[in-house]
Image (cartoon, rainbow, N blue to C red; front, side):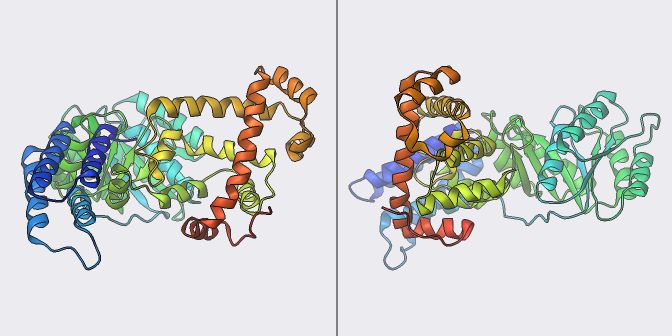
Length: 445
């Protein structure tokens, strides 16, 4: 998970509150000290950290909990609200045909982000064109062209033209208004006058609805100063933070950019084109504190390439008519959704409980299960009850696995099928699933 160490530390604070014999001055002092340590280790600004913990202490001692709420729950809510407060405000971002200008310094991941943003639009049914307006680095044009092929979107460049604004003008003449135009511009090692003038000329021609700054989260607190400088120079509408998955300074970058005046709109959470998501502080802090984010998980299910098959498998699971073919479809869906660790962080109560070794073992086991399922015949996938010893041995040989692994898969299948009874008896979860897949009959006994 993004900012995993910060998340673990803050979840530890919440556990300390839950285990405490009473919410008194001693516990509050411990909690404040632990929050300060967690935020400082995540590179959050010292002054910002001190202000946050002062507010936590003041609110915990001066405010009264709402009727029916315990002091423990109230303290958790205060911590949630204050951590949420340092990450800026939610800002709507419409996914529709529009003109977007990407800016940033050299080496911040701007060109890759252009591809990710194009992919984000394409998955939501918007036609996209990527425009290469970096006239100083030919490799950037080649990279953007390759990304456009991966995404499956349109691409425009003019390798003989040295004026970025002319390239943009040509692209606008080529693409109609119902196409989202994303312009990748040149970067510099620093924010200088030439870069600003070029951006201003491009902006005047493009007349963008969004001017987005791409920043590497490894910059830490200095990311805030960069965002502020660009904001004053070219008027940003938002920031995209890249490489947040591997940055120990991610907390510093998030908090510093949030107070710069330019809202964070997206974060890059990995190298792949799909590891890119909207940054919504409320959801982000929920996942950080182990409270989960069911809404984001459901949205990622919506993006699956074979949505119809996935919905059918989910319906079969809920109604009790679940086959090995359905199980294979669900494993395929999990693969498209991303690593197990990221999925766990979205499910309330699970993200904080499963350690990395267990997640790695689970990931490896799912891959073995998928290989075994690929070695089955259509009849076996649709009628698991025919899988006796002889067939199990043949499947094991064909998949390169042991017979015990095949039997483990069958056991997992039966466990999953039986779990449907518990699934539909959980009214809250059932309502969430029925909202996604529609009302279903209860599974048969």
